[in-house]
Image (cartoon, rainbow, N blue to C red):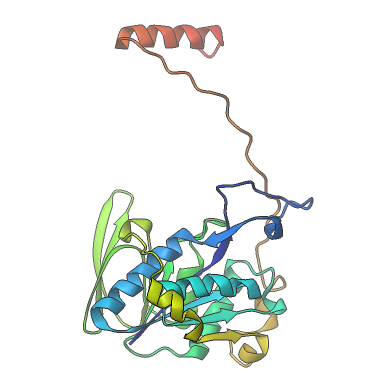
Length: 266
């Protein structure tokens, strides 16, 4: 049994957001981090590894420097990593990205008792589309927004969190699960795995390695195969300072009514 976890290196949006003149993000000038929700998926996989002794494989699509992120994950306990990288993949939107990752995962191999995990969504796009799209293209059952995961034999019992409650589902492997931050708290890197991270296998898959897969039609990958495009990106203007009204309920409501009246809102 193995668990394949898709991860993404994203711009650190807590700092300064750099935007190119054409409205796209200037990723080269921004610090990068591991997508937070993907860390929850990694932790879920490592928890199952601790319990069942399975293998955990991290896979990402990105430029060569993304290898550093994969080494960090292997220092947390991931056993093997795959970097999907090539100029042909640049400019991919969620549809094209899921196409490429699905082809890479299928090429790597999926067994009957395997699980694919991903974070709920990436903080640079917030679409939550790549995981479900991969499941559809791989022909696998999927459960999104997992807040609790238990495995018994070839069946997962998953508590799926919703806005107004939750539902409990059972799904057979192989399957795909997207994880939310409430699922767990990601662990830190440990000394043993830090020392041995460069002894663990890291495989690179480029276009040549994947071109014979049925999903790897050049019309459906990269910028050419992306049906959506980012029109513009910008940093929202800062909001003005708020005002807190103090006093009893009647005092504050009277004061608020006076403020709104002065502004001709009421």
